[in-house]
Length: 289
Ligand SMILES: [Mn+2]
Image (cartoon, rainbow, N blue to C red):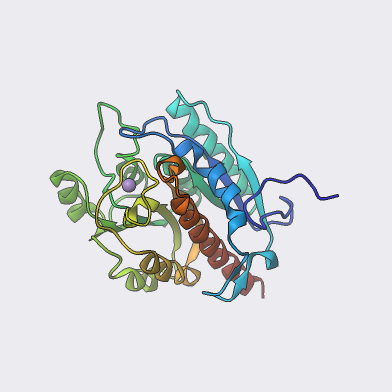
């Protein structure tokens, strides 16, 4: 008899043996335009069985690594602060147990939960942020906790020069002016990404991937699609450099699966999740010899 399991593709190690822990944060409580990212993690798990465990891009296979899929956190949809606390507490548990957290969203605000835990643990932490949107508002609709303020809140934790933003093509003028002073913002594409990887290779780095950085022509399953954006190949090439880094955690967020009835957006999310997991896993392989 097979076990009745519902995990991301081949992420079926036990918690104890796993170096990497995948978990879902199905929260879309502050979504301003079109909700639905709460269905992201389960869609990624379900549809992951449509792709292979083997990556011909990096010549690695998920079956050769120990990754545990916790499932989804239980989050109170109406309570943003409590949701962030649950994510923070869970992340702290993983760090204490020596695991690398990989979180599937959910809306982008969930990043603040992991960052609250990680910024304490790693005082010299840098963040690589891929997104169509600046996410640097001081507040949105009177709320300081929002998917469109998340990187401003992260900046408050980390300070100047720690957030490296790529693919950004939307925001208010004052956000871009803020970025000139306080973050390392690269507009429109991923040019300069490899250079930043080289600069950060000795630092602890967290990756926050808002999938709407992609061209909505290939990734329309998201709440705030923004015309323009990078191709799958560009994103993949960038991700294939991640094993150079001391990646201490990451999140992949903003898939809202039902806006793309073809399922292609979810398939894109599955494939990029596989590639990121393999980059983190092979790094651990080098370190353990
Ligand atoms: Mn975005």
